[in-house]
Image (cartoon, rainbow, N blue to C red; front, side, top):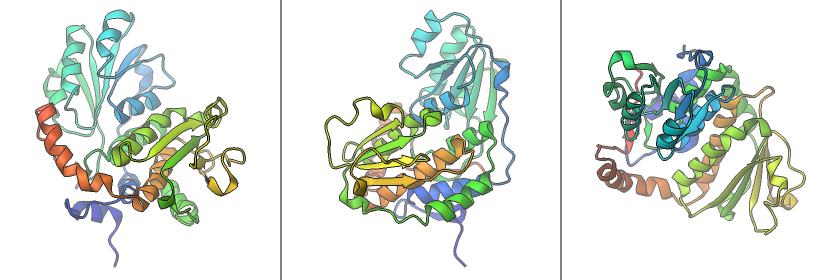
Length: 317
C-alpha cells in the first residue's frame, strides 16, 4: 500500500527532500478533522501585528478585517514609537525564534501585552516573557524541510477561515491534479494572477518563489485588477498562470494556464492550490532548493546564532 503524504513527511531525510506538493497534501491530511486554536480577533482594538516574510503575510490575512497595524522586524520600532492606540502586539512566528524574542522584549519595554501565534511549544519568544505578559496560541505542524513553512502557516490560516479541509483536498485531487500542465521547464519567467479578494496571498507566493528559485527564475504576482496597470508594457516570453478567474487577455494563448478555485474558496484553498501549482514548476526546474538548503542552514545558523537544521520537526504524533 502506498504511503500517505503525512507518512512520507515522517521519514524523508536530507537526501530525499519532498517536493512542495507532497508537503501541501500532507498538511491537508494533517489538518483534516483536527481542532485548531481559535483566535478571537474581536478581542483587539488596534493590534500591532508583526512577522517576517510569510509570517507577516499570514498576520495580514488573519487580521485583515481588524483596525490593525502591520510591521516586520525592520519597521516594528517605528510603529511602536509613533503609532498611538496600539493595545496589543501580535507576533506571528512558526518557530518563535530568530527575531520573535527580540520583538517580544521590545513590546514589553513599550508596555504592551503580547499574543504569540506559533507552531512551537516553549519557544524562545514565549520563554522571553512572563506568563502575565504573553498569550500563546500553538498550532499543529508537520515535519517539513526548512523554509517550506506550509503546514505551519496553513494551520494558522485555516484556524482563522474555518474552511472545510477535506473538500479542498478532494478539489486538488480531482480538479488540479488532472490539469494538463504546460512544459514548465521551457519557461524561466512566470506571472501569477490572483483574484482581488486574495490580494493578501501575493507576498506568500512571491516568497515561495524566492525560497525555491532565488533569482534564477523570474516571477511576478498581482491581482487581476492590478495586472491592467502597465505591468506588461515590456513583453517577455513568460507563462501567465491565473487562479480562479480565467485569463483571456494577458499573454499569447499558448502562454496561459488557468487554474480553477473551489466555489466560495477562502485563503486556505488559495494557499494550498497556489503552492501546489508552484510545486509543479519546482519539479520541472533545476533543484536549486534541494541542492543548497543544507549549506544555507549551516550559514544562516551563524547569522542568527541559532542551530537551524534543514529539516524542521513536527509537533504532532
